[in-house]
Length: 241
Image (cartoon, rainbow, N blue to C red; front, side, top):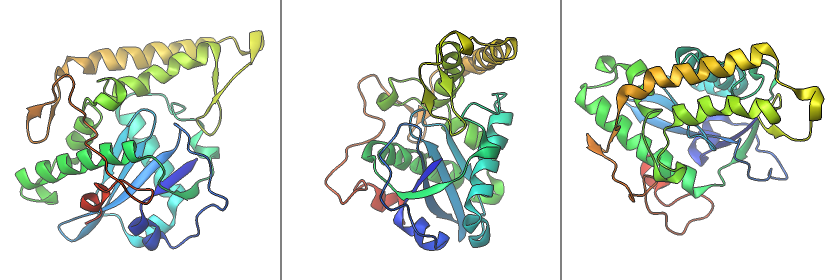
């Protein structure tokens, strides 16, 4: 697993990044450090699906135990969404490789999610009054033009269909050319049906409000405008407060 971290998060983690830098990949994860009520919080996003996790009140020591923290959070949120544990690969066998951010579009989408978190937490008068489970659910149902107005929960559930003709490796990346030997097993088909059913149960949420209750309109770029920068979106300045 490639975990692409913002500069301020890398400072807290204190571990070196990969050298040479890995090639940008849709299966990368992105992470940013946020502050609410003087507490460190982690925003974690999968590049291809924008499946996002907000974790409040993380400690510096837990951030430095990066693999344990990140794989644990992903596994926990998959269980909460009734998605198979292998949706993003075999988490128990994945190593985490730190890298710098590389996709401004993903960073722009994360900025929008940061603003949503700010709004929800302010409305609840702080972290203590915030329903964090519901906040996480709402982040994964936020429509975005960068992903064809399909919510992250739908894109994550749809990954199970890849197991029919292709294969998700232990690191979550799609592997090609497995031929007849890779025909889906009954357990895979059952998992795919379960994931599809889980999304259908959740799809009744309808249009998903963004930006403080406003519903994103067709043609609106949910990731925001991105300007020039040195590898990170200029909008990241706002998220890096």
